[in-house]
Image (spheres, rainbow, N blue to C red):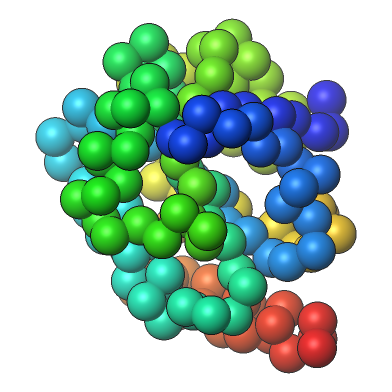
Length: 154
């Protein structure tokens, strides 16, 4: 599997083909997570503020799709002032999400289980790198790599 399509909080289907053309950052989370996911999405919020208007997108994929319906994701996204054009919250079938995690992004994900890594994908859909967001140096490297992609894209 190299391409994927999931349901965004808007109820619309969004796939890897629609994401091509601009770099994007992928993360996995679930809305009922009491700790790590909140901190992780605060990091995405920080990136959204820093890269507002640049075309970079953020793709947050739920690993608890039974709970995380589009309506729940809408409410959750509002907690982070997520710009619906820039920051997508995705859900779908858990088995399919496991495959997306493993086959597309090379990360182990399961129901209510995910890694503390962001995946940076370039405008052509190729993985640029993996970044452990709790580590300041890696988070800074992610920002630098995003800037580099934006510079080479223009």
